[in-house]
Amino acid sequence: MRLSARNQMPGTVVAVTRGATTSHVKIEVAAGMIITAAITNEAAEELGIAVGRKATAIIKASDVLVGME
Image 1 (cartoon, rainbow, N blue to C red):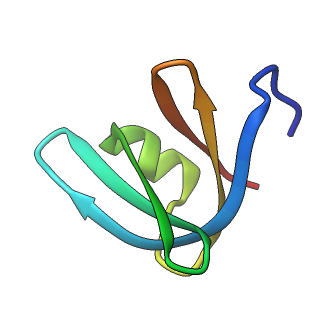
Image 2: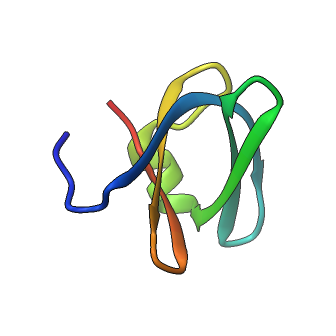
Image 3: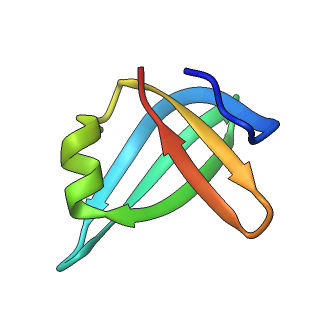
């Protein structure tokens, strides 16, 4: 995956909390360092986000996005 965003932090999904329309995804990017991203439930399903999967926190200006391989 190639992106224009330069702040990319690989890690592991440690929690997914699904709400009515939004899922909160916690990614551990270093020992004890967790980044949380809020994404749509549809995006979480399409990406196959699940605890234990590898993910990348992509930080762009005011947003934290999630990328999956």
